[in-house]
Image (cartoon, rainbow, N blue to C red; front, side):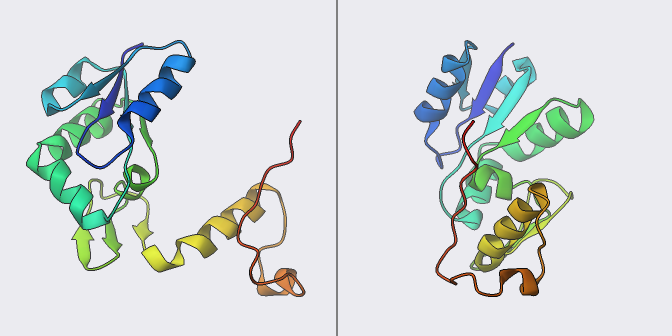
Length: 148
């Protein structure tokens, strides 16, 4: 399996590469959009602001390449952090920015914490309504899965 890690100047690329290698797969950090055609799986990591990340992807030619390889050819794509956010339809962090796919979500930066909390509660089968949070300290924003 050939794994391509997209380098658009917005990520911890070597850490992602090490994680893939730890799973006994080779991973190439790619800086050219054409290299995605040779990959079986694509990873889109990222750290930073939506607008900056999208601008870098577009300048490097990755936007059209990702649409072609993922939407048309059906290659698996893993978005990590900013990489996942860039897969929505548009983002509202500092300004309205169009994103890679006309797909599932609108990403609204300041509301992500609440969305993550609700999704985690749904996955566990817990109530997501405001009533369910009555008496829970408001400072508690992290959640850790039980080990085992």
